[in-house]
Figure (cartoon, helix red, strand yellow):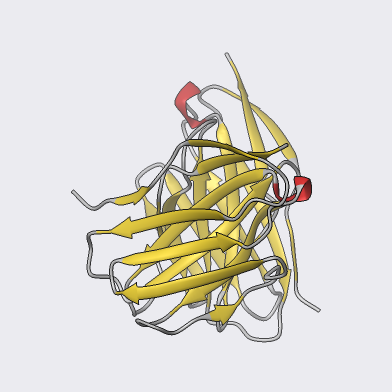
Length: 113
Length: 107
């Protein structure tokens, strides 16, 4: 059974803290993605990666960075968390090929206080 | 600029048919996908159209017209478990998601 896992379902951090969100996939997928989801705004792409050590900015990369040292793992880093980064964060992976069918993790609900 | 437009909410009756439309304006286009997301759950893939026409998968069908930059998801024989949000997504050099359509189903 294919699986994308995320390190935490719920996370509470203070303003200014450095936050790491981890995502692991077991499908040997080349592509990995980080989205944030907010009510009424849908899924917005933060960063994506097509290969190990590769990263591409999405639509809202400001305030975030990523790391992909191994094919199965894609980390999202909030260098200095702010209250406007309170959101649901979703990781996804996909194989290269037609359709770009994405498999999503369960999400991390991050609250920054 | 890039934009995907879909209705924010749609209401239908159990057993009926409902259509959720999606129009898009993007710099590139390879195909249109649809995802379903139940409350508290992760999005799950439903369908992908790269060419014009209708693709059928069980009770769900998806349509694409590239010349009109338009597609729709058709749900037949609606069941209460179909109550969810539905997102269209365009594949260009990355994936761009619409804001989602909340489907309410009345008994």
